[in-house]
Each structure stands twice: as structure tokens, then as C-alpha cells.
Amino acid sequence: PDDTYGLRTNDWYLISSLSGGAAADVQKHAAESASLFMKPDDHWDQLDVASQSGPVVETLVSQLVAVRDADRTIDRSQS
Image (cartoon, rainbow, N blue to C red; front, top):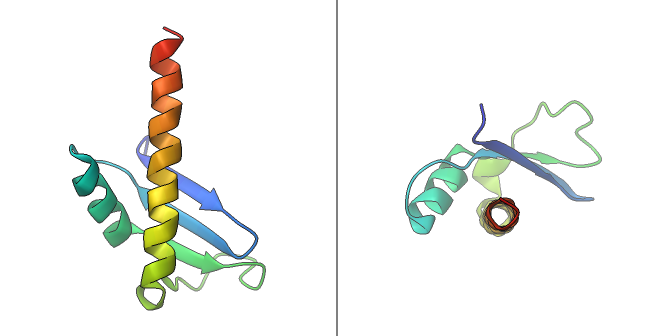
């Protein structure tokens, strides 16, 4: 779907849906719907560790929301 985003670091790969209205709602929904995979060990993204890694999910989701919002701001300014 259009509202699904991913963020990859050296240690993690997060996939989450960023839908909703207010920023706090988006972040809460994104954290609840997130899948998190440990890299580089999980080559095929099979073991979702999001439920055991709450602080990591929260940090990556906040970064993902910030990047998504910055991208939208750039798109609006170029219109």
C-alpha cells in the first residue's frame, strides 16, 4: 500500500504503515503495526522481533515519520 514505508540501518530493517491523522496517532499506529528484522543475521526477513524490541521500534518509527514528513514538505514546496 501507499502508506507502507521501510527503514534500513546496519542493524535493523523496519517496515511500518504510516497512516492516520495527527502526528501522535500516526506514530502510535506505526509502532503497533511495525515489523522489525535484525540485520545482517536475518537475511530473508523471517523473524519479526518488534514485540521484543520496543525502544528500537519507537526510535526507528520516529525517524521514519520525520523522513516521511520531510519528503512531503519538499514535494509541497516544489509544486
